[in-house]
Image 1: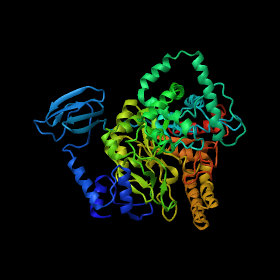
Image 2: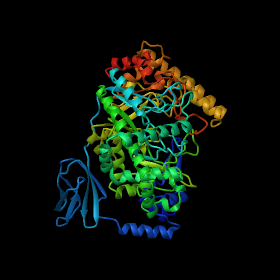
Image 3: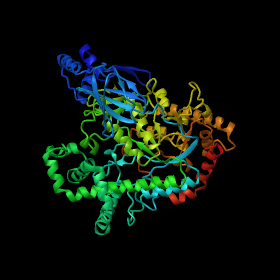
Image 4: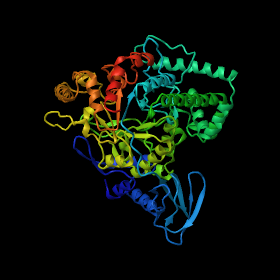
Length: 635
């Protein structure tokens, strides 16, 4: 890159170079820098324009920091002249005035200091979230919580039923994949990690008492099951309008206000014009346009229907959360926040300013993906996030904490630096306001009394894990990755895991216990042609050594046979990690993993059913055995 473009890009957070997981240093090209600047809303065509934009931004620079982290109920100082007047608009709307560098004690929250045209976001956050006691919980796929014999898609009622029984077994939480709003107008857009809106809930999992699910499909058949559920919901809504007292629903509409109206408008327009707003007529692509206002008036009954669906989702997920707590589960539901949102879904239609367009979140090249990964997800624009006083992040977190006592933040590495892949150019990292974002997490989690887990896997930036631990955010320790042998595999003792972590065998993107032992995912990639036969055989040979190494370790500490899944559960139970997460696929000895990254239709991602529903699963002696292992280790 030229010096002018380099300086401009760096000043706006573009990282000039990085080292990928293969140890290769990669420089950010001029084309990439230009594309990322454009995605941020700062297009520059040449060096002269870069210099002009740099001068303009410099002229707008302010004497005070744009954000500042401080502690609740403690005074703080900023570099403000003694005679300078300021006022603070608190999050609750109250205002305080003063002058000089010393600021008053403030309650926990996001407040804004104004000094003339200068604004500073004051993030008043606890220094650290408290760690939970030693406990355990179970991870299940909500959509797959239906057997083929029963059919349909797992719903919030199934979730509550499962939670109630797990509480009796001593589990502290029940974890599921994201339940963000999806794309009912596109039955192929069912991945829980590519949502339409993370501040709204999935209606795909709504329970309809009189629904007759379609039976006989070994896999979830979304093209059939989604229309069937929507049809049942239409019938349920019609019955509601004929018989129910609307007072509670009306109160919900008032409480949610304009944002819910905007979301319902998007949903109604999607029914007419398709799931993705970039393919709509031009005058409907802006939610503030006259055409959208007229459409909202014309589609009034459909807006009310979609608002009712959100109300029902809030009520049903909330009831599942209450059931979990009432059953004795210390944390209740463990929800999952997707790392990004679909670039042309409801979230970006409603909130155009918070996101970057023309670049997607992704991952840098590694041994399994020489060109890196493009996740087709819109990233938060760091400058817009700061300008908006971090409201978009706070509101997104708050939505999750309404129904969860523990929250997983997917790919929290992106809080430090996010990997953006621009259209038509290689990807690069963009620096994010890490300390501010972690402060926002602490504020919202402290308000909810919740535990937070950050998925810190991949190309981890220096210092990130220390920052997470200092905030009381749990990192992740996966048995399959906790190795320190190079020539031969050697597994770390689980007693060496940091306390501020959640320990599990793998994740939904990685092999199950039986799949790992067989090298199932390696053979799959070889057979699909995404991995050449020679490296695949080398990987299978190494896997055999890994299995033998772990078996040697578990044989020393467990009376269970090494190939028995409870030997692995004993390994997790002994870990120093405060939290242990068991996976239902491992307990049931399922070979196939829920998701195989890098595939779409080649593998049944997110479509696999469990072999039984909640009733049968809770009676399965293998679940009781796993719970007994956790209890034996004081969880």
